Image (cartoon, rainbow, N blue to C red):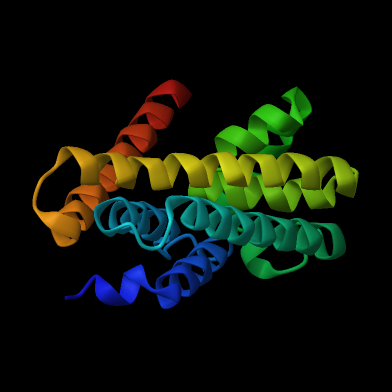
Length: 190
């Protein structure tokens, strides 16, 4: 069965790598991996849902902290891609949001890929105290992981058909939720 690989320890490792990579390259499907593994966990009882949440949360926090360190050591203008108009616009947006409250920005930014990258870079470049940042980033990452895995687990309980169907439906729901959030944020900006 195709979900056998995901139900074992390799599933957690693969998901963690995707979540970690998603911190730097937003095209990597970290959210989908967590949602899918949440569905597998609920449908087959392996890996345990708590392990999916912990592994995804740790990988997300590690990725966010690494981007923070890059922002702190490199800044936000060193490389050419950082000076591109769209990137500068995103960084300016992140600076304004950070001024409004770090906790709220880290928690909500965790759900918006490009914003998450910009926020973590700017948080580092702004020299926000590392322990304050790290505590909030870990809490946000664990909250995000619990949400993503729970969406998959809930779909697996609601939709009959076993792990494969649960994964497919939960991925479709995750993509739909992401598209709805993107639509809402674009609408609010206008």
